[in-house]
Amino acid sequence: MLVDFDYFFAQCEELRNPALRDKPVVIGVYSGRTEESGAVSTANYKARQYGVKSGIPLFLAKKKLEGVDAVFLPVDYEYYEKISDRIMQILRGYADAFEQVGIDEAYLDVSQKTQGSFENAENLAKTLKRLVKVQTGVTFSVGIGPNKLLAKIASDTHKPDGLTIVRPGEVGFLNPMPVDRLIGVGRKISQKMNELNIKTIGDLSRYDVQRLVAIFGKTLGVYFHNASEGVDDQPVKETGGVESISRIATLKQNTRDATLISEKADMLIGDIYRELMQKDLNYKQVGIIAIMSNLTIRSRSQTLEQPTNKIETLKEVVRLLFDKLLGEENLEVRRIGVKVSQLGKTDRDQRQLTSYFQNQ
Ligand code: DGT
Ligand code: CA
Ligand code: CA
Image 1 (cartoon, rainbow, N blue to C red):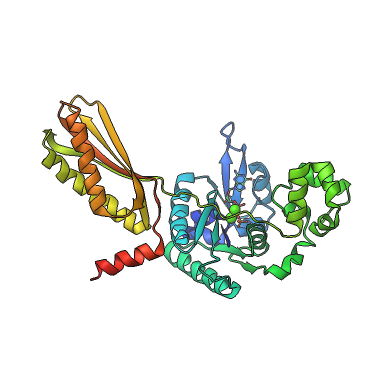
Image 2 (tube, rainbow, N blue to C red; image 1 turned 120 degrees about the vertical axis):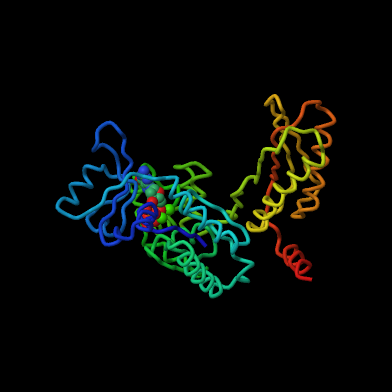
């Protein structure tokens, strides 16, 4: 599945100001030279009706919307990223493997989850649409296909709020599309292909692969040929998402007392553990830092043999690391921090077992 959030930056703006919904909304990147200079980052579908789209100069967008009650806003990337993170976190939980691509797109490998059934995948997509809409207010478009290439192109065919399925026997749907719909076919290459009389993806699939190789080189030539036939075996590559989780706190007083340090550390660990559970993650590396009374910083870390999600292991390793550090230092400690990293998804069986035991 490829999930692509609809008119994303503009939709985020509509979310925090619903009055914008009935108006053309244009999000601009202002270059700062003059008040008017800059380009359109994106626009809602109302604004697109007037010909406003990503990449055109702002002055042109203003001209197209002259006399219209339109709203122009600057990009607020941090805010969009927060919304994006929340959606990604929801989606991640429903995939066998999850690959985020940019701020508003993600591939979900759902082969196992759906037992290879496109019908199950369609139902899952509908569930995800509802879930994300209810929890965040955002709509997105989904493409479902036997591979990433087909899912991506499918997702582009119905927007906004679309759901498009391409089954293995239906790759012919590519044939009438212009070649530049394929990833990797930019302006230059599509121009070159046009000169060769290759205008549609169907034209490309009928073109002799040896000649493609002669013109574009082996890698690209073979890629273009395969792509035109909907052939793609790129796996969904797990993107980390959260890289590490850490907490830091100041001790009530500077100390070398292992019990006092350990009490504080356990509080930080409790916090970290909650976040691990929420995000369904386990950890393989544990680190501590200590800020000493003279404000110098010390750190120690240990990598475990196996990833785990156990809180006892975390407490134990942190205690050992602080013991080691205190043994090698004679200053008092002022602030301490705990970090888990090399995070990974807890596999289902392990989680079921854990919650089984917790409920006993
Ligand atoms: P969509 O998916 O067609 O409903 O509309 P968007 O706006 O989500 O378009 P998409 O998926 O191509 O891009 C996602 C975001 O990336 C979009 O909200 C703003 C940003 N973006 C896209 N194209 C451009 C561009 O040409 N320039 C700038 N500055 N930002 C862009
Ligand atoms: Ca996108
Ligand atoms: Ca989008």
